[in-house]
Amino acid sequence: MKSRKWLAAVACAGLALGAAACGGGDGQGTAATGGGSGGGTVNGAGSTFAAPIYQQLGSTLKDQGVTVNYQPVGSGAGIAQLTAGTVAFAGSDPPMKDDELPAARKKGDPVHIPVAFGAITVAYNVPGVGAGLKLDGPTIADIFLGKVTRWDDPEIAKANPGVKLPASDIAVVHRSDESGTTKGFTDFLQQESPEWKSKVGSDKTVKWPTGTGAKGNDGVAAAVKQTEGSIGYVEQAYALQNHFTTAAVKNSSGRYVPPSLESTTAAGEGVKVPGDLRFTIVNSPNPKAYPIASQTFLIVYQDDCKAGVLKKGDAPALARFLDYVTGDGQQVLEQLAYAKLPDSLLAKAKEKVQGLQCDGGPLAG
Image (cartoon, rainbow, N blue to C red; front, side, top):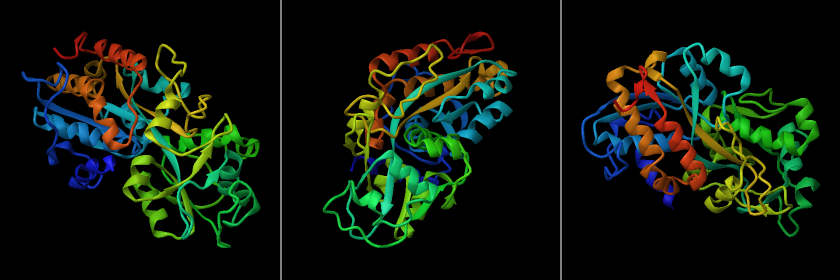
């Protein structure tokens, strides 16, 4: 599978994601990545959902003198580190909430740069049950509410006639850290289940009614892989890496759609995008869309140098990195099991990058 290409990069440092530790890439990119001076170091932290992207793209730029150090600590922790001034960029799957902006604005204006789309899969480890088990939103919510506790429950069986479901307990696995993946997953559940909305809600971390917590997409993936009868939610690249069976989920048009690059791209088509680019694509109205899809953002300050999160000497390195992420790096995404941005949205992302500054001047110097 195409997603295997990122495994060697991840293996270089587990998921520590220090690009200086790994090689790779063909060195080709946009004007910001091709030739000339401008090496330096860029530090980021946040989304584990997007970790393989920043690992692989950073690895490519290593040969051009740009070191990208990215720590996959979860979207919430990434935003907290950007706000605290300890990283030059945050990786976050949900856009920053209105109540998160005031603290960040003490240093400058946060800028959201969309990077990619990805599917949040409902992955399960049930011997004898293959991929494509049909699940709708209310049923998934009831599983994670602890109301549906066995795999042969009538609520599951009704949507899967002819599938031999075992009379075994369901072991729920969820994230234990602040996570954009959790935000996207619970946003879908609250749209599908009034009970979930009233009792649990949606955020980067919630009070889970049942189940066992694990840190990061990789932690949830490991727990699902090791536990028979388990179910969890993980980004598609992690599901592919672990050879998971994943559910076909009922979308807003009533179709059961499996997660794929095509169905994830469909989730982003026609999305309404505000001027600050803070948008979400969960539960798309597109009939071809996989419903539990997420966007992921790279968030920087309008002027990282004035904000005190980037040394002026490293500004050209950040410019190269951002140009690559919104340029030739988009062609790498499919190899990593992510969907690239639609052209119209990519143009808006590039416009945001072009407007970034260092000490009042152009970011690239």
